[in-house]
Length: 259
Length: 348
Image (tube, rainbow over all chains, first blue to last red; front, side):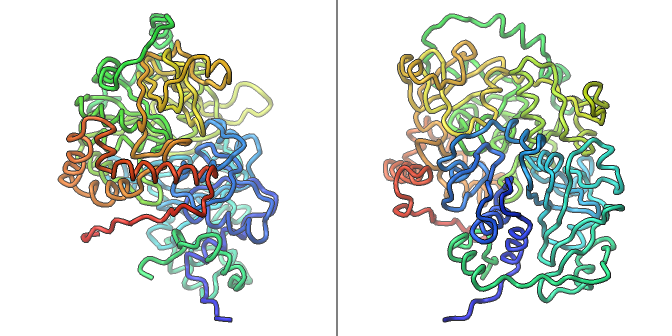
């Protein structure tokens, strides 16, 4: 048997996304790595999850990797589809357990910016806007943020709050009237959660080979470091084989650029 | 609040509940054959200065051939709205749209839209309000329901509220939970074009697959153009009773097979990934490339059939149909290749 190459950073991201998903959950999926993570979870430890999409597809049959959240594979033989307002309504009324969101910036309270770098008055870079991100992040019980971790992308405060995390920490999210909240942040370095009182980002687990120093160096604010650091075990060969051969065989989302 | 391009009247018209009601009251109710050509429908019902609502989902059952006709007819000074609204990328680039009620303009994993960035940075288009998909969807839904507004739990605490003159936050005055809610007004755009799989000649229409916001928009918009893959006898709709858009909402019916190309249409054809790759990676990075690209694909074609010839004609159509059938598991998907030739521009 040939040796299985260790997980690359994108595969590790997908693996950590999968680990956040608990069997039996209803999962609100976006395109890209969250979809890979969701499918990996379904093929490994969480066979009884149901995936729903913002464009309206509900519980599609598995197929080729969707290219967009509106791709026909997101409603492949769906028993039904829902209008967009109703599909998001499911997050509010408690029928969605977990959702994933990416962002150009994520700050220490889990606020996400997908709108603008700089400001609209003083533009450095314009981003696509909220899309469904704000809805998912405002309404879903557990939202998981996914991002590339650098000091620029993880500032103390985002330039623009497109999707609120814990706003200014403490009970400010609850006071704003929002539901649920971010429960995890997944990056190439590891997994973070939020301190239950201050709502500041805290190291939950580090990927193989990562250290607290690396995590801190990739962050634009001071991370909360727990007394004991949990190191995430590398995915097994079996999981990697499923990821590479079944979930994303063409490496659409998990192949490193240039490799 | 003042804007660079959008007029106060355009801003107010979006939430003019009574004005929209008055407009609907004055529409011709007669059940008549409303078929006409795309050229006639766009000329008659899409007017300079209109608030144009995007339908479908970016490249899924979106009336893209109709947007191309809007470009050919050089419509101008419109305000774009929709969730999502990614086709405003080129509508603003060619001057059809000058202001945006923004929910999302982008290409998902393919990144940011460079037309959008350029038009905003050079002040040739402006953002007049910011929304999430769901909050805007609720505004359209409120209009359909006849509700002057809907109270929601999204957009609260977001900086979008600072740049949205329409949404107000209050503590909920009803129910047991008096925490803050966002009041989203009913939204009434002027016009939308909805591409459907089936319609009859009067405008009764059937959407297969996700409807996105289109059922709500058909009720909300003052003017509605239906473009259909197929015009079917009225009795077909009566037998199945699957219609979601009633004829009295509809002003014009256009039989427009392949009207969603180069996007996809569930039940009919898959999209042209190569076309979008070219658009995103080669055309949008510079104005010159974008002009060349649209000169080639839009301004030098007169209709969808000439467009299809450029895509590869019957061979392209056959493959696009097989891909959609495979995606929907009508044929065995292991027989269809979803790989495609990626376009890698040398300056990328």
